[in-house]
Image (cartoon, rainbow, N blue to C red; front, side, top):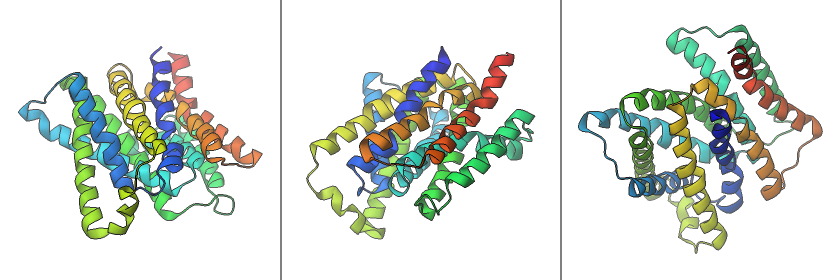
Length: 289
């Protein structure tokens, strides 16, 4: 049952790329990240007021900086600079980064099914991301790699902190802290570094853009992160990652509906093969259990 619940936040997150590109393509990524995280965190604080203890602040600051500030910045850079379907499918490479991280940081060698699936994912990603067939830029690809790494580290931190800190405190304050960091970064960026990138923000906001912001703040973040943090306290990261199969599916569907992105049949075949291999090791592990 928990695995099916994990598909809900994954599906909601998979809509981020197409919704952003459809409604706010000219808005700067740092500001988009702040507008997504900070209001959602404040909404959760309003629903259930909860405050960290003094000794919990350092851990929550690190978590907010990595799991929200960095991750959201990478996500919106991807959303603006990569095709929406490609951004969604690219995120299924999380298992590859997770295996490398566990191997390098913790000395945990991957099992044979995990290693084979990771190798297949790398080959398929290489074929799918061929510049001869897909318009990519270095910034978008770099943001994808950064997002993959931060989601692995961030999920591990969430699971660790949720043991000693109430999960609602972890949930609420990582969003508030991360959103505040992003807001400060956006102010600095807009004031001193790239002020021209913020001109579009001062134009009248359309009904479509208000609707997109509501979607990003409430279902896409507040509701999705409630399920995310609650579930990570009740299942392993490997089990949760099985639910992420819904993320690229949502990305592909929204890219077709909202942006009219079209790909060749062989490209769709590669996308869905990547989705299958991203969850195959977890499926085999759960079957053995």
